[in-house]
Length: 273
Image (tube, rainbow, N blue to C red; front, side, top):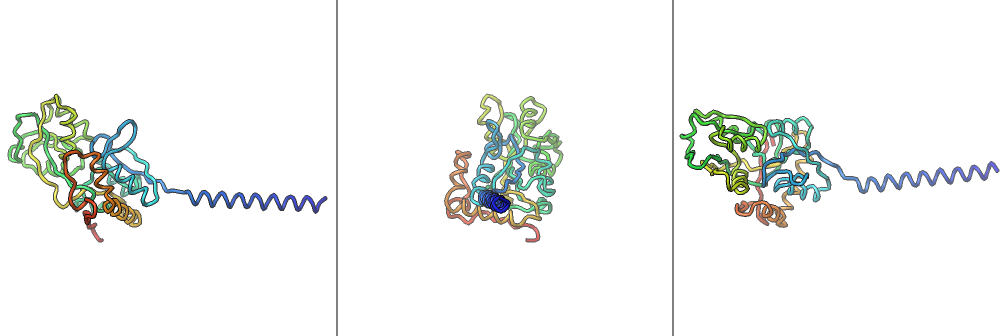
């Protein structure tokens, strides 16, 4: 009896061990790393929240890259002013928010290669005639705190810069007349005008953001993730996915030729790289 019981116990133990190993193997085979992505909720067509889902050109492109490179993404809404610090300290694995890859920002984080270029514009009441920086003196100009537009407005002689945590807050203040101008990326400004045709607003002075393409931000301590983003982006350019996704969100603005199928992309050189 003891011998029989011993054999049964041994068989049960072996079976349990086999099941455990099989389960571990199955789990490992299907495992996928989920990365936290800091983004904004109110800046279409690039980054916005629709029916409870973060979307826009930037975020859908990142989803495409993640699928190619074998990881998943969890989007988390945040204010732009704290986004890069959140990436640098590990609160977020990736920053996705039409982030211009400026030299100053490269001191804090590393950037992927660029996936878009753009322009900075000022949205004003119709007839405000803010067509030239010389006309900005004494004007109240709203910006998203910490943005490239914040830097631009701050360098404009005599302008009174008013900082906001997000785009909706600034548009609301412009609409009710407490701002003379709202300095934003051109695509975001144009999208607002298209969605609010009854509001008497127009685009004023516009300047190209040269040499600082929009890019995904990662911590300087995570070169492996940076490589994955660049590899995935290159593949998405090569097979035309960048052009396809861009076309879903930008109906009239042409895609940079460098990002069209077969193009070389928009390389970003990080500090110390």
